Image (cartoon, rainbow, N blue to C red; front, side):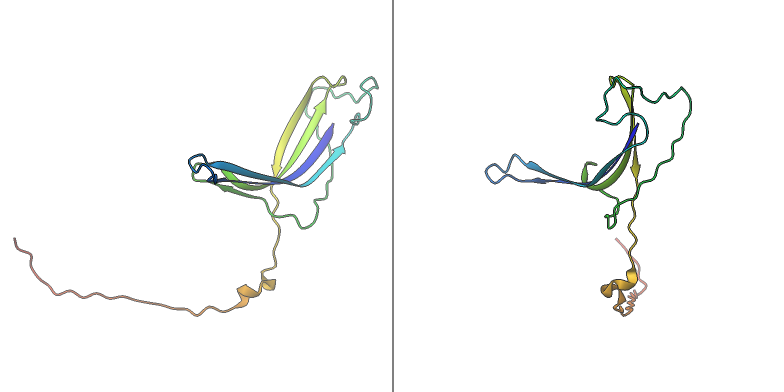
Length: 149
């Protein structure tokens, strides 16, 4: 059983092609922020399938694990286009892979992790500039009159 932690940033947008503007091109970018794999128990990926493994009986199981996120990660983020497609995303994920002893079948479960990076607003110089309060009021007065056709 292994646990895989990943962090990825993805972005996409549509651009008009220089030669043929009627055929737009989708530009896609992807960057892996980090990827870490940890063996919880059982055989590692380099061990032979003929070696005895760890038997898990049917039922509910919980396994403790610990993982330290790298420092200075950007916060989780998603931005959608008008059509509902993701245009930009920073996502973090935890995936658990469980294989049978012959490595012919397995189970996998995946969960998203929300990462919120704290920010000290006292250090942002632009936020310390005072802003004058401006109030405006508009009044309109009409004389009483009668409409006739």
